[in-house]
Length: 371
Image 1 (tube, rainbow, N blue to C red):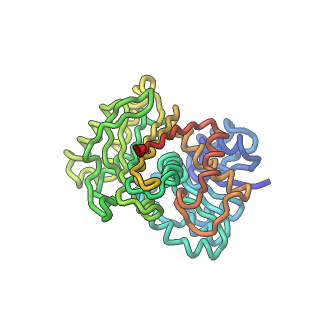
Image 2 (cartoon, rainbow, N blue to C red; image 1 turned 30 degrees about the vertical axis):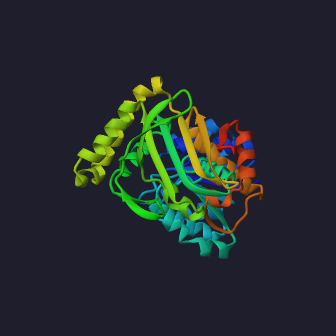
Image 3 (spheres, one colour; image 1 turned 90 degrees about the vertical axis):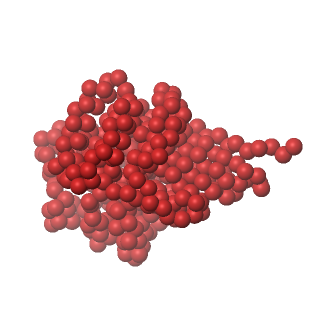
């Protein structure tokens, strides 16, 4: 029986990945965490093929032993802003395949630096395997393949309330406000401020019109390296819109030294978490993705618009990581090295995996007709 190790598996996203694997694979699954009581309860709720292992990632001896006993490691222990590549490096040393649900470019860069080592070890390592980034990146590949030449990629995300992902997503949001970041605009890297340049975007029901803002996402870093577009835009917002406005205030009114203090991040994360525990009942915890890829097709301007809506953000992240894990375990996705998901996952396998999970992606190709 194949063995899967999910680091941070007792958290909301890790449990969602494990639940997906229980349905779509026959693997034996080990989830890890630091809280034994919570982790044991999570394992019991998932089923007999899931066991819990108390593990702190700072325990390198225990970490390497757990990795050595696995056939695939899935890294869900965020936030990833300050994580190093030690988990991936241990997987390379033990020749164990790897994937993660990482969501920050600094972590992405550390992992991509291990590409040659992973290739030499013969392991397949896939980063950004959640929902955004993750499913969103594969939606970009799916759309770009409809064009002869992609010139502009615009990704917009909206999350309702907490997204069902617990306090970790709150920490990630506020950590993303700390520093300006580079984006690929008009064929060059330009610096933008977090949560700037708001746009009103029309999302599918039940969300409708909502504001989105520049947000530091790793796909803004990897997509320009994968596809020859001149501009890649990644913007994010929250429902209810009050949360977006409060996040904007934090980004633009809080003194930067205060916003960069770990204690302030924890304070804001806990306050936000308590607020969403109330409003989640009204707003839900879903996610919507809206993509526009524009360029040329048959010598004419063309645009592909894709949308996705899922009622639970954490479960959607489980679909993203679980589907790739399923393909790796089945030997259908094998490419030694370290890869962002859009670079390694063929559209045909992506579409099959999403269909098997009941995920519907609505896509329209718009192109002016010759008279």
